[in-house]
Image (cartoon, rainbow, N blue to C red; front, side, top):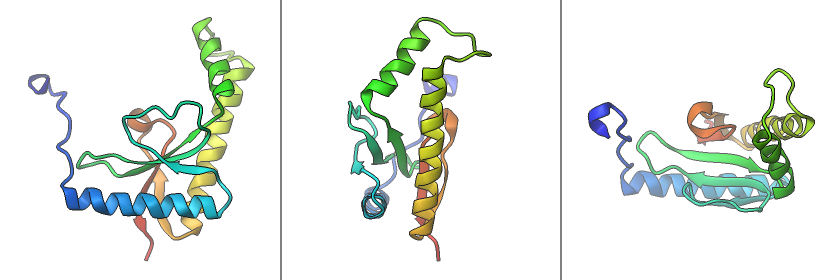
Amino acid sequence: MSEYGFGLSPKAPPDVIAQREGLAGEACRALVRAGIPAYRGNLDEDSGDRPGARVRVDPLADGGVLVDWNTQGELAAAAVNSLERGVDPARLPQEIRHYEAVQTCMRGAVLGILASAGFQVEEADAHSFGSAVRVQGFTL
């Protein structure tokens, strides 16, 4: 696909991945200490019905540590079912509005908690990572 300009970035070297793994572990511990259910996950695995903050490492060179929020499967399924029935974007059903509100609120909470714990954080690129938070390191 690279002949069409769709090539992926190269993977980060092993030492960078190791640093990211350490940072991900610290971020996960900080969330758990704050009372947020958090767990380590892989970028390429589905979190299933496990709710909470999934902390994962993106192995690409321009990747990093990402934290995204997973709702209980029942809430996500209700939103997906509404979408499958077809919706008017100007009048979203309550299930979708609620799901989006939860994602927005939890992203804000994760950003605030990690920043307070000393991490440098920002909203990740929504096009690539949805509502994830990107953890870049520690503030000095």
